[in-house]
Length: 225
Ligand code: CA
Image (tube, rainbow, N blue to C red; front, side):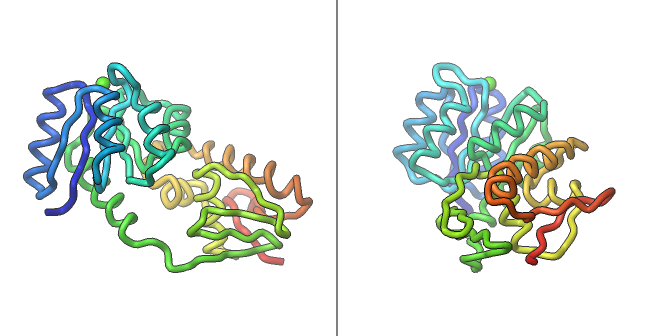
């Protein structure tokens, strides 16, 4: 068995189709057709991954995700009919691992499931990273500057962590989207600028340091100087 997957999707025809494909790929599947049942199953069972529709009866998918994240770091792939930057940013910021916009190719979903499960089974060996007095503990998701804790969202943390892991390397916005967001963002590279701004607001400006450098016409880099 490849893994135990919870599928929360109120369109029963679509749910049955996804289930059939997942079972064919060797996964075991449990289905829920509304948010409340999905949440109960997610909190009660031991799933390797959750596929979660956003527009659901009773409790919507975003709220289900929020409640799952209070106690569990199970990988979650969100499904939605909508496709805007705001929705994606909100979804990923709430702790979703990936995002699929309907309609999608089943092969694409299967690929993202494999990616999410692989990431899950290979936690980073590196524990502590630092630059310019900023230290991050990758296992505790903790960040501090000169021993003062810094509160970051998961997405801010992931971006900072990627740049810290690759100190001195300049990345384009496209590469950062690919590496940190991990899905095709269809050219909405503004999200990278938005998150760099968030990080600078919480770190550079507060501690009066220059951590994330802009390389004009190229992208961003963290230098340790
Ligand atoms: Ca739905």
